[in-house]
Length: 290
Length: 204
Image (cartoon, rainbow over all chains, first blue to last red; front, side, top):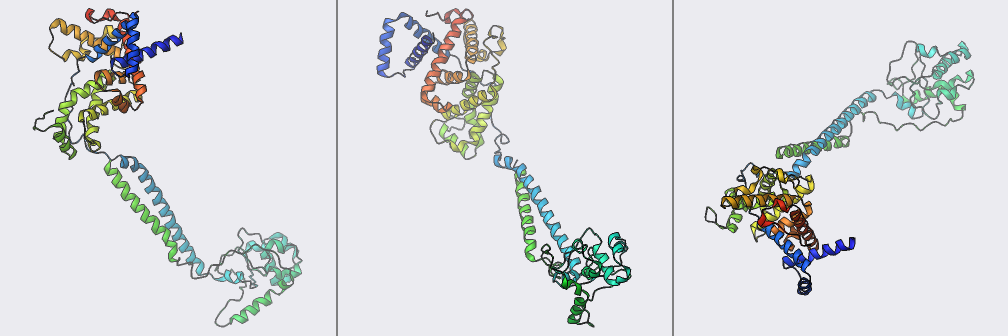
């Protein structure tokens, strides 16, 4: 059945091409020989020829109206702009947001740098100079474990140890010679000097509280050598302590450079602002082209 | 062709390529019937044929720079055939004149009524035949229909059809043969609806 249908289709194809005069001379001769012998095949050819003649003889249909063009109809669209306009707008918005973030970040960094520049005290600790800061903070005195184990006659040193053992949420970096409060706890009270580190948690440059004894700071009346000597005297017990491994201190920032960011810090902001401006112009042009 | 300004087709195309819309509109007036006829025969829907005709002229004007000479009409017909082909593939548009509803089709839907100046009896017969044929053509599968229309309505040869529809010449031949055979079978199956003079007899 399938083979018969295929043969019929093949014959229809030959007959169709014969009607169009598209057969090769050899194919045509063979088909004409078949047609001469097969009346049924001739009838199929005739019905196919009449069908084609009917279609070819169909009168044409007239256009129901004029299709004249107007200038508005043929105005060239901007397909590229049409596609790119939303993407450009999105890119402009993203670029603008990034620009603002960079700008705010730089401004904040400059502002914090200004505050940090007025408080050089932590820098002393970073340089490894033993420093004692006695704090009279009520919170520090309330620290129960240290105040209970240290006799009151220990005086200044015990007070400093108490302060150093007070758990505080923020710990400034300390030098290698300054143990952390956690490390200081197992040592007996008579080694209270080990608490001679700067009171953790105190903001740099914070004014001393009542009763606090400030470590010696360089003043015109006290030469730096004297100050270093006094500090070393205060921190003498530290010398007998083994060096405790401490995390590497954060990179130092030179006072005076924080307030004024280097010019290279503003380059990304400028670049992003320029990019935003260019994208905004392109976006506007794309929307207008639509 | 001769135009209102006394310019031939080539001069009008050249003027239109320089942006002369009036020159292009002369080409529109000259060829709109041919374009619409082809679109209607392929799509079988007067409204769709109107849309495609208008879009074809707009697209032709915008892409006139791609016309490299030769017959402008052939270029235009290839353009409209392409658009019809895309339209058929995209929307699988159903013709408004279906083979099944042929018997109930009203007279106003017959576009052939506006053509020719036959006698009243001839006009009735011609209109009836035209409706019948159009219904049979749109009953063909789209791939076969467009090849049949391009060949037997538009008169394109196999090579032109192959370039227009972007299929091999061998495929054109086989599709055309199947379309003609199927159309013949449809006409034979509904021969009682045909005018007596146009009835096809079974060959078997």
